[in-house]
Length: 182
Image 1 (cartoon, rainbow, N blue to C red):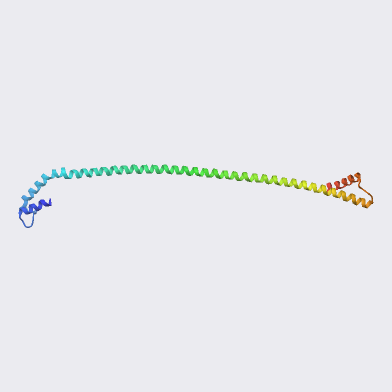
Image 2 (image 1 turned 120 degrees about the vertical axis):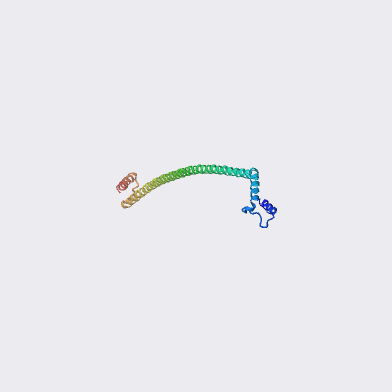
């Protein structure tokens, strides 16, 4: 359009150029408007129409992209919610497994402690039985030794042989009787 104005200014031959507000040049303004109005439908059809369609297409694409982004956001939120639910379920499952493992470990410890106590009680009972048996054996040997010493002592005191079976049973009864009292 600037080219058209420059052409008109040269055609007029004025030094100052074309001035549409100058009343002496209203004829030029008239023809400028006529040319503009004739060119306007062509500009609308071939220039502004494609630009408007391109802008409409762009606007439509932006709206579609916005809708797609909203759907993607909703899907992401749904996926996030599902993942959080799964994590909560896994955490609960993990806590349950840990509690079960602790319970099993505690039960195993109690079982081992009870077995150890039972084994200690058995060993203690065996030791007591062995001690009691050794005690009885030692007392029996001591009694036999006391009987022998008593018989020998009595024989020396009486200066005769007291090796007789009757005397031996008598002394054993005496030693056995004193052993039971003490």
